[in-house]
Length: 327
Image (cartoon, rainbow, N blue to C red):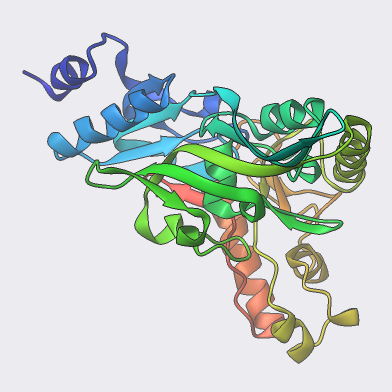
C-alpha cells in the first residue's frame, strides 16, 4: 500500500488528499502544497491523525486559522492536519448562587480549532469576562495558546485565564495539563519547545454584565481597526517586540519596545520585494499585494533583521512561523 492508502485506512476516511494547495487556507495567501492533507473536525480526529503520522514515521504539521504562519513555496512534507474542531461549551461552574445570580467562576471548554473571535463572542454573550479584549484576534484557540497571544490596552494574555488543556505529544500521547505547564511568557509557551498540539482548552472566566463585557470587546476591536491594516492579506505581526532592557540600551524614544517602530525607522515602511511589502499603516505587518511568494516574504524578513541589526545592534525575532520548504 502507498502512504496515502495507509493514511486513509488509519483515519478511516477517503478524505485524505495529496498535493493540496495551502495558500487558500492561510491569511497571507502564499506558499506551496501539503504532501498529504487531512481536515480534522473533532479533537479526536486530530489525535488520531497525529498517531497515524507517528505510526507511519512521517512528519506532521497542525494548523488552524492559517494566521501567523508562512508556508514555504516548496510546500510541507508529510501530513498536514487542518484543525477545524470548533466546539465550544460551558462545562462547569464554581462558586454559589446569591440573590438569584451566580457568584464565582465559569469554565468554558473550546476545541483548539475554534476561532478566537467565535470564542470571545460566545463568552461575551454569556456575560463571562476574561477573554473580551481579544475580539478581533485572528486565528484559533490552539494558535493563541501556542503564542500566548496578547492585548496591550490593558495588557492581557490568552494564557492568563487558561485553567487546563488536553494536548497530544509528538509521539501521539494524549494528556491533560494545568495552566502552569505552559510556562507562558511574552509570545511564548512551552508548546514552542515541545511541539505538542492542543486538543481542547478550558478557560476559567468570571461573571460580569454582558453589556460591560461587550463594551470592552468593542473598544479593543475599534483600536485594532484604527492601528492595524485591514482588508488585506497578512499573517499578522511579523516580529516580536524587543525587551524593555534593549529599548533602554539603544535607546528608543520613551523606551518604546515596538518592533514596528524599529522597522519603520530603518526605512522599510511600505518597502516592497516582489509582490510583498511592509504595510504603510503599521510597519510590523507584511502585506501580500497580489501573487506574492513565500520567498518574497522571507526576503523582507531577512532585510528587516539585517537593517535593524546594522543600525541598532540588536536582533529582532520573527513572531510569524515559517513552515515547510523555502528556496
